[in-house]
Length: 405
Ligand code: 3PG
Image (tube, rainbow, N blue to C red):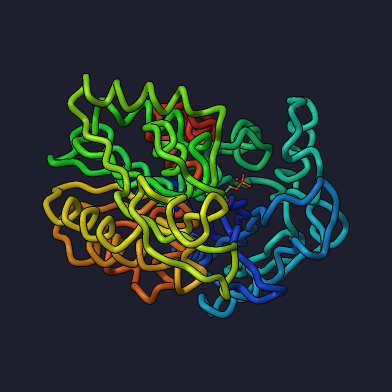
């Protein structure tokens, strides 16, 4: 970005791809982390006199306008927090966007409507994406530039992330640069012991990352819904808990490979088992090898790791020099099932280790539970993106910037 600023941006229209994909409750932004993380680049450009055009997605609309997924609440937050002159277009590349972009004064910001309101944004057809990218680029008029600051979306081969970088002088935003620098530390030379905590509901979302981490991490702590498939793979019954039966073989394979590679997979030894999924569910703590032996029998649902496991996980974290955490340990939105996630977050907050919290869910979890961003080394704005980075996958948004200005 410094290179672009050094070239001079006064009066130029600069298209910035930001990640404003924030959780909403109606039109209320419930976690503004991504908006806050997007502001520095927008602010730098605006203060240097650029006419900043922000493009971003929100949720997964079906390629057509859908008011539920309007970018407007995120744009309002951006205006509120930054204090900049922020205008919001009623469409992505239509009359409203064109007119507001043409009239945009130096130092002001225009936020385009959700780029996913246009089906070409995410199209598998490269020609469709290129056509849409050209329409976005055209909003900059002459002498435009493109900045990708949407770390959370760099794993997507989408028009506003990938194709557009070929059409305008393209630069990497500071947020992308920071995220990549931090994650590189984890893949290249993590200070040991390196502890990875994985949670969330699905093993199938984390297969490649587990594969990659088995040879790198010293201890892999597994909680959340995905722990039950591992427990079942070890031969324990898991009642009505989340189970991916088609992943049992894979999990068995991980358990035996981990032993060979000297990585220790740590599973919960106790779990909080509930009568049903809900805030008013009855619940009890049971040993992880006796989930069906409790009051709810074979219908009991494991919704959090238990207190002993919380302490065990915390003690691994305390002795670590590097920690990566992705995915909550339980249904943290419900207070009765938030203790495991709180134990992990608390141990990380107390630890001196280099710590990275990755993933929208984990970031939202720590904020919901009352922790501050400063309590952790780095809170990544990327969920899928940070996992794919750790998997060693090529990320289209980064590739597109390579060799670019
Ligand atoms: C995210 O939430 O991880 C990013 O904003 C990307 O969103 P997506 O998974 O809908 O592409």
